[in-house]
Length: 342
Ligand code: ADP
Image 1 (tube, rainbow, N blue to C red):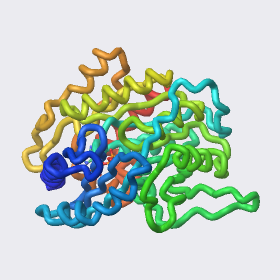
Image 2: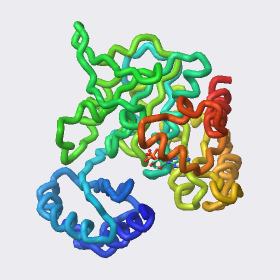
Image 3: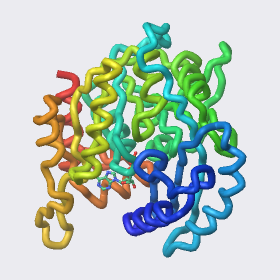
Image 4: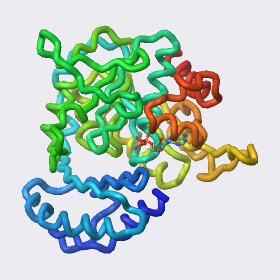
């Protein structure tokens, strides 16, 4: 159902006028859309001086989206990616006592990047590593929910935030820095400031692996991470569909441009094992990411099937690696974690 909503909204935007240009919205470049269980999150990239025009048109657009079949809510935010100068020379890196910082990235939303971030963190922790998880996805911070966290972080005596611990993993989310209402617009410097706070103003302690869940796409968060964070590298999550792969390719090229090593690709929703007939179905023509990895000279880290239990477990805050530690899925994540730590 979410796929149908996704296509309907893209269709609608392709046929709606951007109030500034008068042309249809550029859904390939300016729109980031994530639909979950009937709830649509739409971020529209705009030029900051045009915010008033977009704000005036917002309720009109929202109404149109809400009138589409099965849409339960439509949250529209405006972002302004200032495209921070990629070639800026060595800026001071944020200080954090982490041996390995790994960014989890994807070209587009909804491919399972946050699910991978959570389950990979748990797998690394099972290998005896001290692990922390940072949710930097400004478009839809979902890590606290997936980790079963409902509290907000408290401040320490030094006025730093104390990460919330769940299943032995220290967690922080950019969502905690946002006041009850989402900012209408995220500008590049705001993103940089929020990230700086999340790295330097949190009592992280000593960490072997810090996993950072990035927003989808290739914007200011990625560039800030590349410039200000001593990254070991990035892992790209992609589904095997062509379109997701094209986006993944963009991501790989961007990380190459900013000299961040790509540690590998994970193919998510790789194939589906039917619970009734127990047969394997290759819904999205499985194997695309592996081929892509070979073509691009990037490691292929593993594949995760499409499994209903995984969706239910991550959406209800009960990670599969903890609640079904002997399952095949938990094993797949462990294998990937072993490849990363090898
Ligand atoms: P992203 O971070 O890329 O936006 P999420 O991790 O939030 O994506 O996943 C989107 C939805 O897909 C969630 O409801 C999640 O539970 C589900 N999901 C992710 N990976 C799988 C999988 N391998 N099998 C089944 N459902 C999955």
